[in-house]
Length: 128
Image (tube, one colour):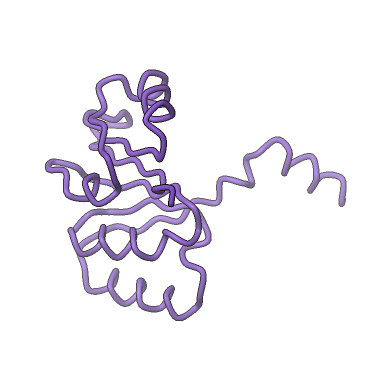
């Protein structure tokens, strides 16, 4: 089974200062790190990313089926999360994450990045 993609950063102003990256394939992780995070620590799995020290945010950008477990782990570790939608694959899991988040000191942000995709913009503009 492939491992999900994840990214964890520490922010200083608007730019990452420290970064950890996990990718399913070693070559893909190397290429991503060289292009986007040259000083990033490479991790073998997302649990290692969540447990890195001195980090402020976990960016969850994985297959939908992994979102719940990654969000649970990040919140339990006291990390703030930026995640792509959907937050989970079921309404029940979404409620559990919401309850966990409300009891934590973490920030929880859901990205709607598709709206910025050129392809998506073309399709929606055609409907008008």
